[in-house]
Length: 244
Image (cartoon, rainbow, N blue to C red; front, side, top):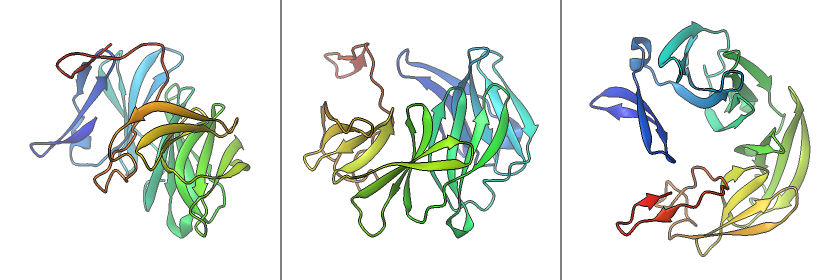
């Protein structure tokens, strides 16, 4: 979580399962900047880390095991001149950003939490609206929308760095809220959540309905931040709070 409190930039890690909150004291060079964050795990050390791209020529990495930041220089100026960021994704110790620069060129910026290094990958040469990043069978993919027909979608999968292949095209009329594990989270006109698996073409009722889900989050609607299937049951207490 990142925000401005009393004119000071503040950052914290929040674990919704344990309800633990850890305040991250930002290094002085980051106080007056607007960093771009990513959260992931170093698979070699099993250490949770936070990366901050400072939009200049430096970045910082926070290690939960060390409880400290490391500031370093980089040579990946992809956030300079970027017009828009189209979502993020995380897979196997690597965090990804999808960026669109001038002339509508797309770039995938990645950060490896093990080596603590940035790398830039050329995105697909498509001239349609891009909804965002998603994972398809643990591969990075891009969901795009046909500008001429707003119900026609296509998914492009990165088969190797810089090489993209159109996996599937489909029509989708419900409002897309989020993506997860080869599936899309959709909101019906009755504000009910369903999932659509792009591999199997199967629909699944997520048994959740709330007023406003059929609207955009910025238009007095509701958004879906993250979805994950788990064997742990979340129960609601009498006071309305959620408990595990």
